[in-house]
Length: 473
Image (tube, rainbow, N blue to C red; front, side, top):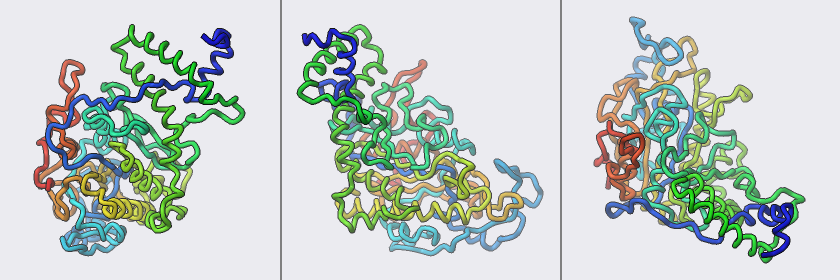
C-alpha cells in the first residue's frame, strides 16, 4: 500500500479529492426489479408539473354557460365555502377560447403556441384531487398519496424498469429556477423503495455546476486520474467490506452507487447541460434567451437532451413555493390577480411545452416518449369573494394533458359540470393517470409493488379504476 495513505491527512486528501476520488470503479447496474410485463409503447417519460393550481377554466376547459352567467352569484343561497373564501360571482375565463386543429379542441388565447399542438395531445377534463392544499396535492399527484413519505412516480418507474444509461441517473428532476415546489424534495423521493430510486436534481441555472458539489471547490488541490487509481481501488475494497455486513441497508447501497455515479457525472452532466451545440433554430424554438420564458424553455430543452441520452424519467417544475418577495406569484396560485399571474406563467408554459412537443416530434422521439402535464388541482369558476380577479383552489376539477408514448392523439376524456366546478363524467384521480402511464411503459400497475407495513404497496393504491383504455392508441 502507498505509504502516504497511512497518514490521515494524506489519506483524506487522496480519497476526498472531489467525487472522482470517492467514486468506485464498478458501473451502476442496469438492474430492473420487474421487467416490462408486455411490449411498451413508451420508453421514457417527461412530466411537466405546474405547481400552484393551474386554472382549467382559463386554459383548457371551455364553459359557455359560465360566460352566460358572468357576474351573477355563483352560490345564491350562500351554502358553499371554498378553500380560502366564500364564492363571489361567476367569472368566465379571462382569455377568449377558440377551436384549434383537426380535432377542433377548444383552448384559450393564453396558450397560442400550445394550441398548434392539440392534434398530438389528449386531454383529461375530469381530474380530481382529494385535497385543496398545495403540499398534499403535490404529493397526491406525484406519489398517489396525500401524506409524505411515499415513493414518487419516477421512483416507481425506475424501480420497475431500471436505467438505460450508465453515465446519467435514471430519474432526474429539473426544479423551477425560483426554488422548490410545495413539499420540497419529498415530491421526488423514493419513500420505502430502495433509496437508489430517488431522483437526482439538476440545477439548470448553472451549466458549470449542474449538481451541487459535483466538483471540488476552487483552490482545492486537484487529484489527477493517474494518482486516483490506487485510492479508487482501496476505497472499492473498503466499501464492499463495509457493505457485506450491512446487506439490508438500502441507503448504504444507494450512497455507494451515488458515489460511483458522481464520478461519471463529472463528465456527463456538464456535457448534457451544455447547449452551445444546439442549433440557433432550436434555441429560438425554446426561447432560451428570453428573461421570463427562457429559464423554463431551457428546462424543457434539457429534458429532451436527457431522454435522448437514456434518462428514463424527467420531471420539470413550472412554478415554485410561494414567497412574498415578488410582485408576481412564483407559481400558478392566483388568489389575487389571475390575469397578472396566469398571464406570466401562461407564456412560460406555452413556449416551453410547445417547443418540447415539436422538438420531440421533429426528431422522431415523440412516438416513444410519454409527455404528461398536470397540476395539483384546479381553480374555482367563481371570483374569490370580493376579489374579482382572483380564483380560489378547486380540488374538485382540473385538466391534465398527455402526448406521445402510445397516447391516442387529438381526443378528450371525461368532463366537468356546465360551470367547471366539479368533475362529473368519468372522474379521474392520480391512480388512473399513473396506471395509464405505467401501462404505456409496459408495466402492470397491479404487479408493480413493494411489501411495506404489512401490505404489498403500489403507486396506484387500491382505490383506482385502473388503466384509461380510451386514451391508449
